[in-house]
Length: 396
Image 1: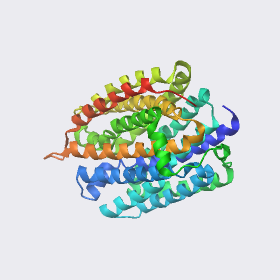
Image 2: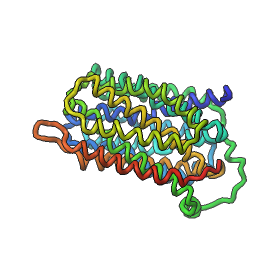
Image 3: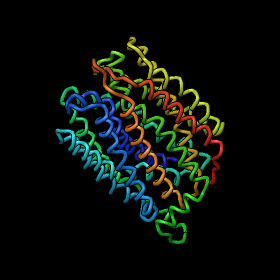
Image 4: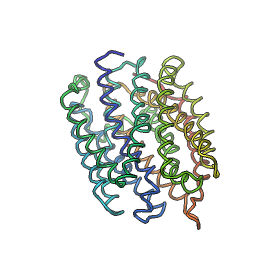
């Protein structure tokens, strides 16, 4: 991997870190937020869905313009709005304003993921892209290992709002570095292509069976994950017996494990092929999914073992999935497709969180009931991915 592009990928991974951290911190704060705002699980799921639903809408609209601008300038503009929304989340003090702040953050954050993937896909040829995607995915691990535990530590010492305020400040410093270091990203503008209107662009995407399959894979994969994630931390506290102070260890150990496993999976993906690695990782992921959603009161080490394997296998199936999806369309239309793909991802996240809120409810003793149904739904939904992946064709 060349040194100059590698530095660019590191900077983009840092953007992903703050982007992912903003979303991830909501889940381990779930029990605190439900108690602080005096809300039910269904209302918490709406709080989570507000971000992803608006992110999905903005990602859809962003697809119409994402390939018309320098990717650097577009990224910085959206990132500034995203940081403003994150800071607003740390300044509100009740449920409705928080939902509104999450929605604003989602409006600007909805296109960031697709921009990052488009830049990386433009920089690296297909045969090297698995390693680049693995490096990007490490931002999830770093957010887990460092970001979430530190955010929870700040929430414990200074209140839950401190996590969002610190993230906003860190992102502002990163934005200054990006402004000065990130090179212009105009290669896609040099590709001569006929102008199309939004309706024609959507028709071109949805008429292409390969692109439709790619979007279907994204929706099923993300839906199967997000139906579980919002309520893992509250379930571990209320049903399994972990304390709020022990929740950071879920993300610490899970993140450390994925930092090591992601690089291995990236190399194996490039060597053995994306479809084979994806299938194995998908089947292995069913074990921790069923274990976590049926976990009774157990020692802490048992709970942490289950959640760590959950992190490993979900990340292991995401790396080859992202690589496959990045290859279903050529460079000239990749930005628009990735924006639509990001929109589908966010809508799937919103759908998963909302569906989880319908399946999970608070029992008489504040225990969460119905989480086992979430595990069953996750396995059934993700099984669709095993039917879609073999039909994908890679064009660049």
